[in-house]
Length: 73
Image 1 (tube, rainbow, N blue to C red):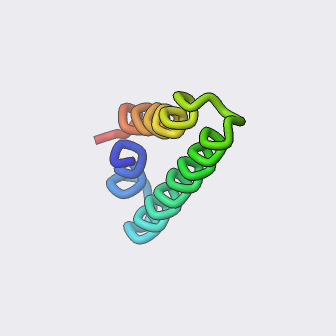
Image 2: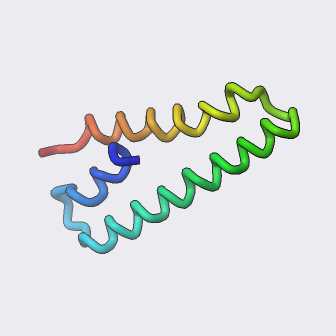
């Protein structure tokens, strides 16, 4: 989540700092919502347990790494 949120807060664009913090908060809420849904699907047997546990981390982690490496410093 740090790699995904950091570009929103420290970006050199004309964005507001508070807008970046708000986007980070929304990303965190989205991550936990996807995680809880995947856990529930894994417990019910509707999703492979390994995918249910590691899927949200892989998706958000991959997006975070891409956003982090695209960030201009």
